[in-house]
Structures are given as C-alpha cells and as structure tokens.
Length: 313
Image (cartoon, rainbow, N blue to C red; front, side, top):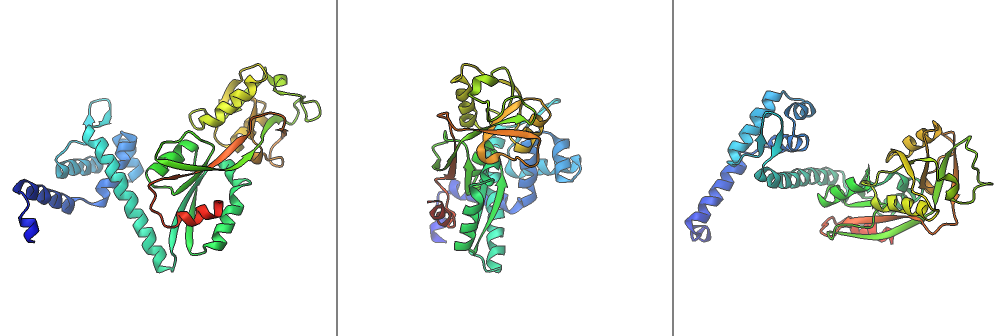
C-alpha cells in the first residue's frame, strides 16, 4: 500500500482511470466491437450478433464513452476504424482469445485433461500425411485434446499470429519472422483432366500438349509458393497457363474439371478417382514437387505444442 502511495499523482490518476474503465467493460462490448470492426457495417454486424441495429449502436456508443475514445469514423456512406479503433482491435482480439482458451483449459481440467492443441491444415494435408500423425499423437498424449481447422495458408497465418492456432500445415515457405517452420512432406503434382479427355497416361509426354487448355487453379493470393510452382511447371514447357477459374477446394476443382470448364494441377495426395468423372496423371518427370510445412508461432507458450513437435520429428 505504501509503495502505491509513493507513486506520482499523475500515475495514480491513470491507475484509477484504468480500474474505473475495466470495471465498466463487459465481454459483450469486446464481442460487439470485433464483429463491427470486421464487417464495418452496422446492419451486417447486428445480424451476425442476433441483436437489433439500434442495440448495437447503443453498445458501441457506450463502449466509446467508457474508453473516452472514438473507435469508429462514421460517414453517411461507410464506417471505418479510427486509429484508436485499430489499436483497440488488437487488444480486444487478445482478450477474447485469452478468455476462450482459459475457459477451455478450465473445462478440460474438470474432465482430467492436461492441454489443448489447435491444428490448422490445408485440405490436401488431411488426405495422406496428417491422419497418421494425429493418430500417433492421440496415442502418445491421450490427455491432450486437439481441435482441427480446415483453413487456407493465408487464414492459418492470421490465426497463428493471433494465437488462435497453435500449429498449421500449409504449402507456404515465405513466412513472417514471427514464425518457425519445418518441411514435413513432399509429393508430386497430378494433372486433373475430364474423363473423356484425349490425353491419357499412355500418350502424355509433357505439359506442352496442354498449352491451349483453360486451367482451374488455387488462387495466387492464398498460396503464392504453390501457385508459382504451377507457373514454373508450365513455363518450363514454353507457355503461360490461361486461368479460367480459381478455387481452394479440391471437390470444387474436380467438379469444374468434370464439367469440362478446364483442367487442373493438384497435389497427388488430393486425387479422388472414385467420386468424380475425371482422370489423374501423376507428373513424375519434372523438377517441381509440392511441399507441406508445419508452421508455428515463435512466441507460442502452449505447453502441449512441444509434444506434438516431437511426434513430427
């Protein structure tokens, strides 16, 4: 108590303001703010929160009054975050994330568990590589509960940065310096052609035979490394692919190919020869291979993560 009284008056006043502020804040204030910060639209945010637009406006106004800062810049046409709002968004995400993780650990502790691990992955990782790893981990560490999240490379990196994921499996190597990674799996690419396409495994020689085709590919912004490998693969045969459609989902790609809207190139592990009228040709005589990386945040403090990394290694 004496140490507190010895503080400068200005510091004591700041402490009092913070205490007063936190006593008035409610979890719903953070939740409402984060949804509005994401949508930047009161009606859409209110619909997602299942409350009226006027109720959302009142709660955001109340939050701004408590904080003494305008979090949003409102005009007749749009809503944007203020500088204070941008800063508050980072803190609100940390608070909500920490609360969720704390409650999960508490519930797990009641049931006798010892930890929680959140695992992100691109769809192809679940076809061959990841299932036996997860099975081995569940056998070796039965008291650690894990959650699986099917996400793109980009979404995994965002979630890892916010510590909403503990580890991700992605086809990306250019990572922020806040991340660590190891290569865990390499595989060939496969061509995906309509079942009635004239090119077959018997008469296929190289990609130059398919220079005039339309291509259905993963978007560049979702997986730049993977996308560039496809471009290089085609470039080595003297052409640049004409991209007609883009998708991050294997079933969507296969349906588009089946419908004759183009051909595709996918990781060999993603091939599905039973549910679609398509033909796969594994590309074995090319230098390009697709690589899967395990990625995690250097600042992770999840005690369960080292056990999972031991299984990977």
